[in-house]
Image 1 (cartoon, rainbow, N blue to C red):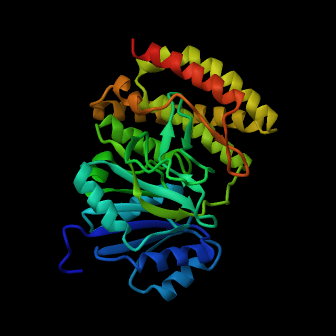
Image 2: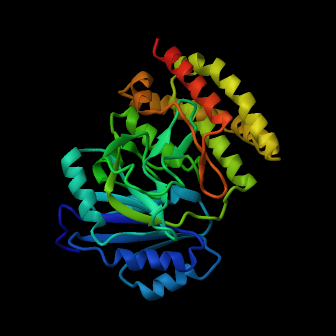
Length: 347
């Protein structure tokens, strides 16, 4: 690695009990054509033997091991030692195309500084969309566009999106340094929302590049578990409280309070209302940290909230447990509230 190309890419992967999936991911990366790269594999205190097997089978990879699971903040360890002028955050349960880095780099050269994500399809069903760009609404509710839909080319147009999927995000090292570290306050979920939103605050757009297809299994570790709902709800509020200005929060408050009634009813219907209460108490404990976070981020902000929300959507789709998107009555209420809240914020 003495003569590194200007297009050298550092691929940062976190492993947590990846089993055979992480090895399949690494095997697919090894088929990468044309572009020079390094792989930095960070193990988050796995309890299976996946990390040992990776060290045995892939001797040329950079290995780091944490003594405890520190969540997605572990990516920062990779950023600190990355040698590339470009960075990829990649989940261990993905399979990449041999030309993936070349496509990312060409898109970057064409469209400029930003965060980029590919079209993500299901590993076990290559005709089913996992994410055709990640979308966010004004209330911090996020979803993967097209998730569960059959891929018939309906999302084959390059476009701006709200934020890029944490499963695969490409950018330059310069941009990654500008945005700053992955905040370990999140642990898991909404860390990618926060990263894309913070980027937008600095006038760094997020893009969807459909020419590149990557297959994503999707971790089932916390699939629809109470802990997942707790993290999603708590982390959504961390974003709202630290990324919007105080004046924007006041304008949005009446609409958020109405929405909270609906969300509480949803949690009750699922038998997980305790997770909503737990999230509230967790936010109270983090209050000082969240306030400090907002003050720091406000100093870095060069784009107003009114401009940022132009790349947010009004709708929201909650995937069902079988992976299909259902535009429920609840979703329609959110859409109506979002439109009214948007008008209030842009006055």
